[in-house]
Length: 140
Image (cartoon, rainbow, N blue to C red; front, side, top):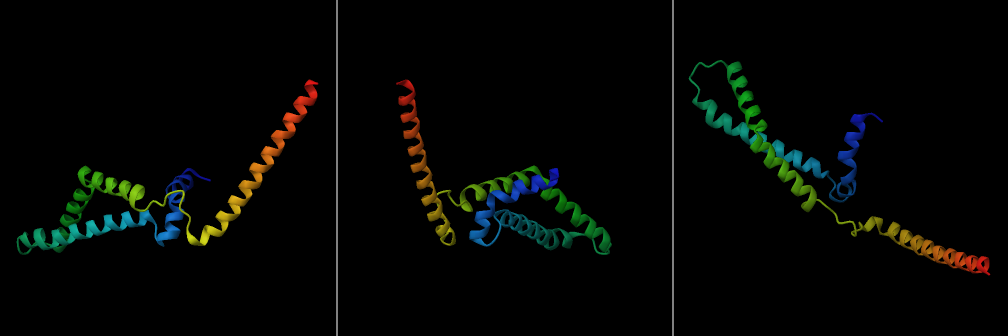
């Protein structure tokens, strides 16, 4: 697996259960918020700034100016930091399913695991008893 694959795996795997439950990726949600904010900024630029340009301004020049302003807005550290905080908060507190919660479709597997765990604990106790018995025999 390449380093890029490992990086992508790191970002997607931890939220697999949440994606299954919510039917969308938590990271997809934060990306959608980023895109919505960017689109709102574009509309604001179009309606406020572009209308203030002198008449006869070349369309290509308008589009370049618009792109430069958008890049400047989305790359500013305040904007990026706030979106990073939003993403961190939503991943930790909003779209996080606690470890003790089991989705209804997985409850069947949870019962199997609990039963297997009980069997394993009993087996461990039996082995410990045998070991104690063998130690007593070896001491005598």
